[in-house]
Image (cartoon, rainbow, N blue to C red; front, side):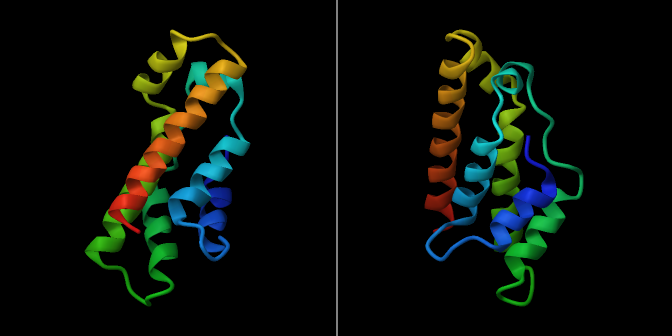
Length: 119
């Protein structure tokens, strides 16, 4: 599982044309272990949302309610991996690679939803 620092760095240093949601999902997918998928990895740390808000606000110079809302949705991508719903979704499928692929699909679909809200 990716650390908060890796996730924050991915958002801060993302290439032009990459959304914050895409940056987070790329890091999460790179660190997926089939065992994590079924056992549930830890979610983001308690300060992750605040740190993510600061990273997103760095380009505009100040945090706004819209930036906080975006950070909340991005933090949700990380927490999604630890959710009972994701574990149940993959538990009914084949373990290992099939479960990993299912989680990847779930994460990309969630990222697309965040991108629609915050293009």
